[in-house]
Image 1 (cartoon, rainbow, N blue to C red):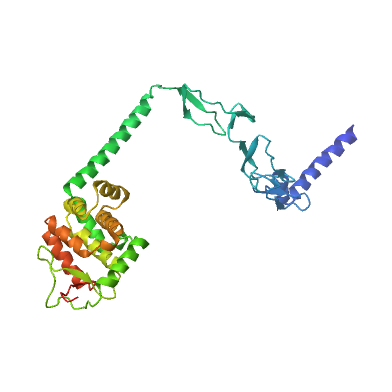
Image 2 (image 1 turned 180 degrees about the vertical axis):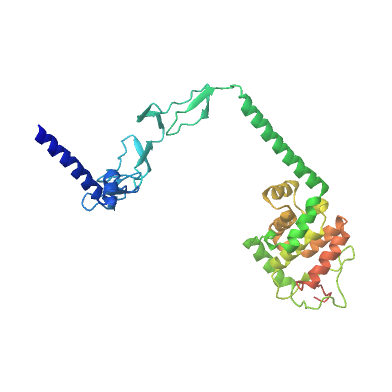
Length: 336
């Protein structure tokens, strides 16, 4: 007994001394093993971290696993929401028309349908069933306040636009956009109208010259000098150039009267207004409409005569002067 006690008393100090003599790093490794980041595992062979394989296995967080975990395979009633990668397992969700209840996430249930006497308030999703309420159900108080606020906002915007339109404050904006911002202009082609206008040009421009005002000119019934297309100019392009000028010279209040005088119906005028998103483009689009439906008979003199008829003499003079100075039109010679 005494011998055993002596042997034990000798062994304990020696063991403690050996433990103290071990390297500190080896002791820490034994107490707290190396952790590998998500997407890797701890190899048993060399103690290093190895990467998992996309689509086959994964680890989702720091770990000391000896191998990666196999990727989940979605069941028959589910589809893949996101595929398996090194650091994330496969995510599955129920197929369209079914959902999984929070209390039984492993089974997909068929979504219920609303009856003829019900309205759907929440659609069916992979995480929740469709929710139906009886028709004519009173709107909840918090939803009612939201709807009232939305309606008030819409009414405020409509009133603001109406005031701007009524006071014609937008005309100055359109004028600025037309002169400074070229994006306000759009090119609209019509091959039928162009062919008719080309035929008109070939007959009318015979013998015309590039002088801006010959000694003798023909006049309109009201005494105004007539204009013809100058040689070498495309009739459609020349008229479109004049149409662009009209938007800045003709007052907004006269647009509808001018187009009615030129032959557009009220229905056609309203259709052009409804189809044109930029307000300063409306008159230009109306004039294009007139040009394409008039074809062979379209002439700058029709436009100038209509301006004279509706009392827009100032706009007439500005547009006529612009047409001649642009080189697109000349005064018609009596000998032509």
